[in-house]
Length: 270
Image (cartoon, rainbow, N blue to C red; front, side, top):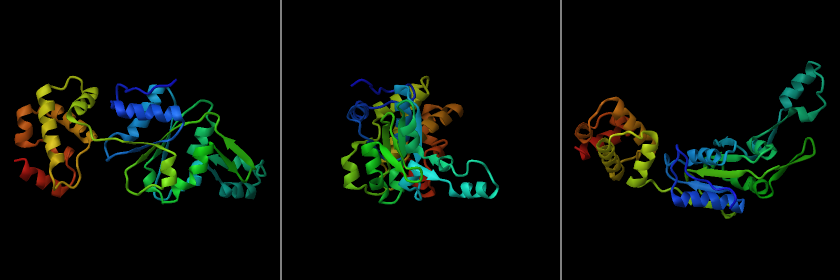
């Protein structure tokens, strides 16, 4: 493999995740990343771009997003407006074609990393509507009769929170990786990338409480990695000692975000 993704100073990736990224790059296939919220799916694309020295293009998917949005948009309203006011060049339709994020990635002069973020938010037909473009790395603009072909095949990373099942035809074209929630050893490494000087006892006690909260059966929203990192920061800023963490649960609202969960945590961890 000519290009190799490695962990960065800001993003600690497991060996399995690095291998999945590098296999997807070598096979020139999209990498589909799943995992619970807060496991770093979106940040992975940023880390890949930084590690490989490439530009990152982000296509944020919403419930109303259509596949066409990522290809191009024809601004008929602006053309009509310009025609009414006698603007020059109104007959040049190409002036009113704006490329979407996928189109930008195809037209880039150098290879880019394209993040299609939270693909499962869109309707069920969305992934299938992208099959041709992701396979062939091209699309056709009907208004100008121009085919846009990728100058360089982008490294495509697709994230999903598993809110909807993705079509089998789409899954067959992807390399798949599920990001497991970090174990304590990896979590310590992740935290120390943000706070290398955090006191060992404080970190261990905070992680013990954090994983204890995640293990509670009645918890509705399990705290994520980013929330632990924020909590560690709050504990340090607040001058909290390691011994106070379990006894007083200081700043626990940084980690637990639902009223019912707060009550559960206080009852079970007392």
